[in-house]
Image (cartoon, rainbow, N blue to C red; front, side, top):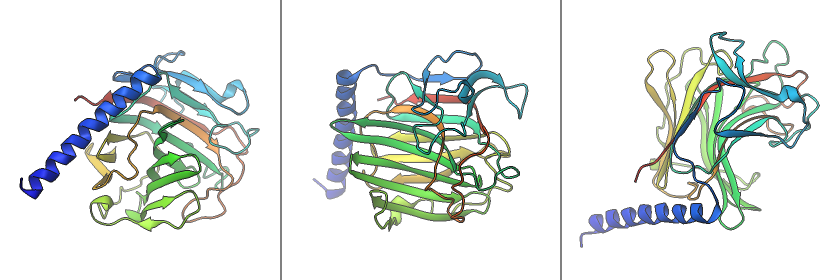
Length: 301
C-alpha cells in the first residue's frame, strides 16, 4: 500500500475511533446535548444554568434585560462583584445543562469598558468549554479577554490531568494585527515552545481597524474536531469570517472528550495584559459583560 494512502487511512481510523470514544463517554457520564441556541430574550435560561463559587449577590447575573449599548436587544448580563476574591469560578458564570463535544460554537458579546473608570482592572471575560473528567482529564477550549486591554484576544486549550496540564495558545492584538505568540507549554509556569508549520496558521493576521471588544458587540466562534480546532470571528464591516488560528497537524492539545459550554467573568490578581504588568487591580465597581446569544451546532458524522 502506498505510504500516503496508508497515512490517510490511519487518520480516518483515528477520527472514527475518537468519535466512538466520545460516544462511549457520553453513554457513561450523562445527558448529551443536541444543537441549540440560547438567545437570552427571557428571564429564564433554556439550555444553561447559573453557577458561581463566590458571593451569592443577586446583582451578578440577569437574563432577558435590555442592553445598555443597544436598547432593542435583550441580553445576558454578568456583573462582577467587587466583594468577590480572585479566582475563575468566583465570578458569575453560566454552564450548559448537558455535555457538548465536536462541532461549531459561536457567540455574540461585548466585554465591559473600564478604560475611563479603572484602566488597570484585573478581570477576565471567558467564553469557553470546560470539564475535568476524573479519568480522561481536562477538556477546555478558550476565548478570553483581559478587560484592561480589549484589543487583545487570548485563545487556546488546556488538556491533561490535574498537576500535569498542557496548554496550546495564541495571543493576538487584533487592532494592530500583531500575533504576540503561538505556543505549547506544560503547566502554568513552564517555558513555552513556539509552534511552527501547520500548527501556526495563519502566520499573520490583518488588523481590524478600531477593534475594541468593549466598544460594540462582535461575533466569535470555534470549530472543534478530533484533528483540528479553528478559532474565528466575523469582521464587523465585511461580515466575512476571519480565521484567528487554524490549529492542526497534531492532536496535541486537542480535547478528545466531552465538555460543558460556558461563559464567565472573574477577577484575576496574577494574570496581566501582555503589554502591561500593572493590570491586576481588584475591580472597584460592578462592571457588566453583555451576551446577545450563544449557539452550539453538534458535529454530524
